[in-house]
Image 1 (spheres, helix red, strand yellow):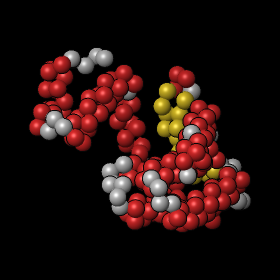
Image 2: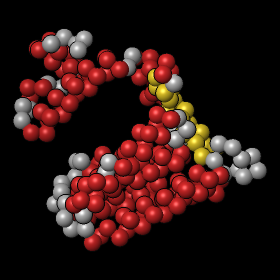
Image 3: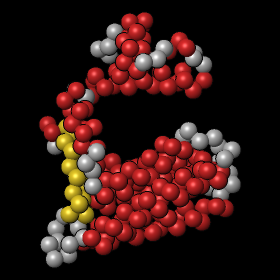
Length: 212
């Protein structure tokens, strides 16, 4: 890792994130600090400042298709910070994420210009141009229907999941990741991300079937 090691690295991270790692050596804060240290090392290996700045700036200009994918992911991320003894809150977050994707997929379906046809609502962010890898999503006439169907099924699945009483938090995290993977498989236009979203949809299926 190109970052300085030991205390020097901690000092740099303290200045960058405005808090001390030694202030809370145990529990969640320590895990967060350790995660930030790993993130900095990975950042220097896989991203340069220009590419990272472009990625962040493009995040604020994403279209509805991208937010259909991101809503379940953001919901799953939020669930990591929710205590597992609050099933009603967990279910509400899952319902909010699924309903957001459903509404956006309905918006894409009804606003798709059938006279123009072709791919619409396209988002593209270059990631590794040398390998031809880019975040490239969009919908055509068929995938717009598939997105709407997936949104309806995903919302219905969250709605009927009230009967789940065992490991509710883990269940909804896996389920929301499954939803995001299904959405991504139908609208990805780059072969790398088609495979990525397909695997994102497949992996959560194993614990969902095996446990619940």
